[in-house]
Length: 72
Image (tube, rainbow, N blue to C red; front, side, top):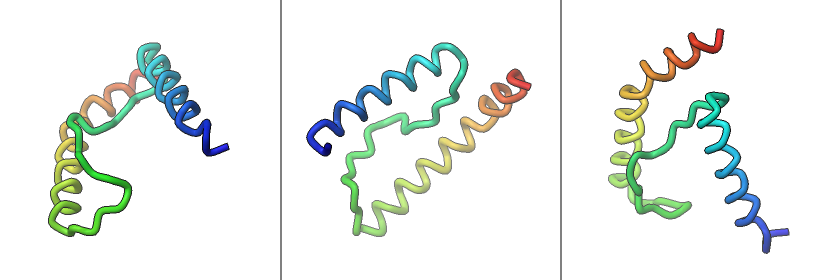
């Protein structure tokens, strides 16, 4: 099962891209490579990533609201 997990993950990403292109999904993801692993013990690095995510969220929020309003 784990041997094929990466294939399922990649298929999920492709499906998500398709849904986004069709206007059926609004994707929020990092704009840059965060260069982190799954477990981060460095609190400064964690704080930096949190702040980047927060800033991106603030920047993306108007677009998300517009997208949602178009779906209603």
